[in-house]
Length: 210
Image (cartoon, rainbow, N blue to C red; front, side):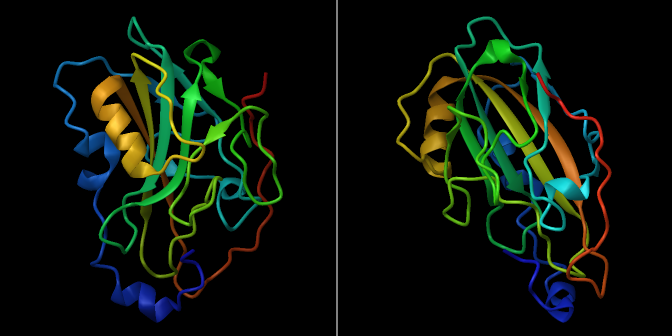
């Protein structure tokens, strides 16, 4: 969505960022002391760069994720991925997945539908900020600096009857009523000055497959 902005615009917008305080994880208002989910990925470490295969500069696949330490009573999980540094009033939503089964413990690479990729069968995907029912690959504006992509996982005490393609507001309301715990993993993506597309071959890397 943003990679085609001229570099001069990216520089001009450097001071305009939605802010990490506006992501769902930080605005939900969950009580302190509630359980935390251990959320991780075999593809990148917390606050480390996202491999290009998961961004608009590569294949644009959704990355693999793993989770552990879910609280007792967890019936379903919800994943929300947002760009905390988008030059917009609120973070851009890059993915929403609802109805994840807690006992699976992971989400494989490319499980969320994306360009040229159908995704995993049975995946219940919500609308991203591009109004697509898909993974929206990170594509920060050139010259805007590093963007933090917040992978947020929530444990729910129920399996809410979401609409066919729930948006952020619908999911937020359900989380406010049913969330038991949350986990956060940050991936970084940045486009260097003077480059709109980074042309390089991404390494295969480890994948979280069954």
